[in-house]
Length: 587
Image (cartoon, rainbow, N blue to C red; front, top):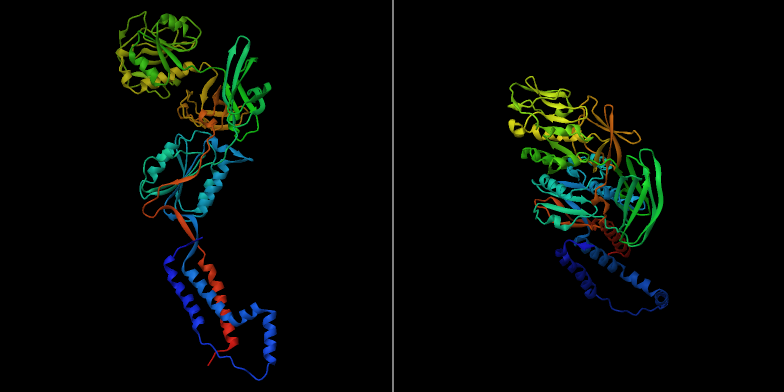
């Protein structure tokens, strides 16, 4: 408890005045009376209860002093300190990463933070409140909402997205919202370093609500598998981030069939890793590993992988123009330059780009041919037209100028023409043939060139039955047929997840696991894996930084208690009046 109006301490002079009055008031003379009957009775009563007798004689003094002292105390303004908002805009930044699911006794940190948010909102009824969720793309849930019930409903609907928080993006986003007028920003997360607030924000008050709890975590740090002549070999790396040794069970299963392939026990020492190897497993498209252990964080106890490796490299013929290599690098492939022999050896594991038509009859995998090394080009003129092939779903090449073309392949399907002459063809094996050297066109000057390169690379990669690996909520374009029913996503149990109009708008699901993407009659698997940063739990404290300008933000409030003493004061005055009335007033 504190006092708000120390300046009123001068009023203590009034009880002192009353005290002095009683010291110097008139004293009566002792007079001897003729009878001692009443005197003896009075002495007996005094000896039996001397304190009560003293109180009876000085009741009026005590009542007056108590009333005056209580009045002085009320004038000093007693209060209990509390945190409250001064007013203005309040912004809640909510961490929705997977690590928010950590917690003890089945109560996750995310659920605790939701309760803390509700408590804050209830205390700021009628004030504008904005809620921002974290992620690679921070999102606004409600903006400057003054309806407390609507804000509480929005908090109840918040869910963990499993995506890494990318807190620096959320902070910049919140700063842009609070750039005018300032704001009181509350961040609900597990841990946030003070270094994130190196820049001084004069009109923003930051309050960070950390986890504060030490948690036990045993995680599948790495999980991989490869096909071997004897079947499948898998490796599981388990990390123990706790202070004691941990023992549990590890299971490997085929998520497609649901068959458990391995069920074994493991022990990992405190603060160390354990590497488990499993050989001669049955051949399967996907594997899932799970550890059953008593810890405080479940999402990193499961991991899934696909055994069909995704092609991520391209080998470009050194005789092709440098812009071809640059285009394949621009679409995210690791590009190397190779000779004829290197191209042939890489055909089964990489995307091969060349003008050597002999590779069309070698190997089992399709290649990309740009130009021809066995013929000469001939001048051509006319309008460039393309068919409704998936290669041109996002790449419009109608405005590309082509000055000369090589002779076409008679058995191949033409999907683009210049005038009446074939420009781009496809073989039954899936080879893509561009019948022109890049330097004979202005195609590299158009945005459709890297888009076509991406589509061609995706089509060659689509020879497998998988779409590859994703992280939660990853936005990544995939090659789709462009059918009216779109690209549908299901779980392995055929539970519907979502639908995308085309492959360019594809966003991976939030929850890690194995999924199916259905494009017409084609069905492919893809895996969503937890990011490595979400497998590490960090203990974070709560703290506040900065203060707001212009009367907005958070401050230490005052819960005044002086008014509670008014009733006792009035009661004392009433008792004092009654005592005075019974004694009578002197003439």
